[in-house]
Amino acid sequence: MPQDAGRSTGIVTTTRVTHASPAGNYAHTAERHWESDNDVEDYNADPDACDDIAEQLVLGNTGSKIKVIMGGGRKKFLPKDAIDPEGETSGRRKDDKNLIDTWINQKNLLGTNSYVWNRDQLFTVDTANTDYLLGGDARAVAEEDDHVLGLAHDGRLGELVG
Image 1 (cartoon, rainbow, N blue to C red):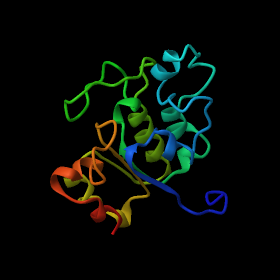
Image 2 (tube, rainbow, N blue to C red):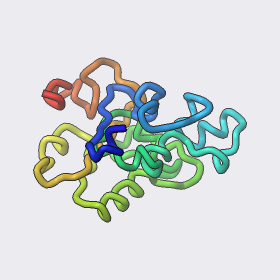
Image 3 (cartoon, rainbow, N blue to C red):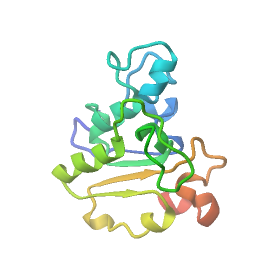
């Protein structure tokens, strides 16, 4: 594993970061749709007995070591009573965990971090002095390849990876 060899890892996706395709890099789950504790309950399983995918990304052995995380599905990380920063939706978590705040607090102990949720914030990140980056979009699934962090409206995905 790259992390075991001391290498940095990252996930950049035009889907939800908790979607089955990117989640295969950091999570183990019996059901691909268990993206939040709410989803686990929807399948009549006990969220206390099995960690959902979002929780594994933030707290899991592999997920917690990922240095760059960018994609959609922010609501899977927020409690139901939390209003999304863009005001489009509320969170989906029933356990009242705010995994974005947990990620920020965890990374504050390890180095410098940046949490961004739009293009302007992304392009003001001081990459030379940022050890961890979390970029979360409210959209559940990208409508097109350039829809990460609202780039469909004000930029191109190529700007992220170019």
